[in-house]
Image (tube, rainbow, N blue to C red; front, side):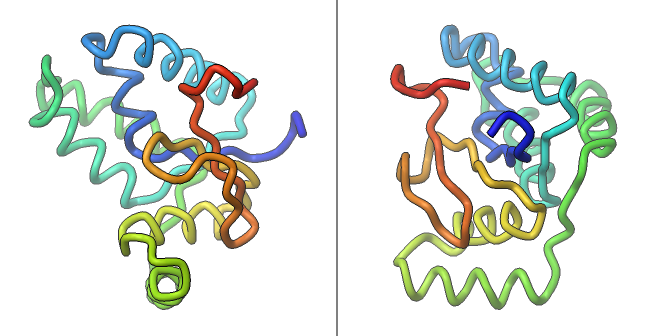
Length: 145
């Protein structure tokens, strides 16, 4: 489905800016560039918040706050899902029903709300479909983008 929307989990964004991640950096950077060009990318407020904290504090070569803020400002031009009460309730249901972590359930529900058919994540189960969103780990050799 070449025109389907794609939601990025935080880890994909982090790898796109973490040069120490080597091959994962290259794959994630290419994904990000493709989504900029195609306009199919979707994010959530949670992903942007996590990205800022992780990019400035948790990666091997942290970004300075100004650079991380500029990246977030740029990404705010994408479709960004604001996590509201409805998403929280649905995430709780998903968490209870499928034994996902609450935060992962929030990502899945935001992807669903954003109209994404694909959720790119290294952390969730590759190939699984939840709330109508198919999870893909782009770092597996078998995944085509």
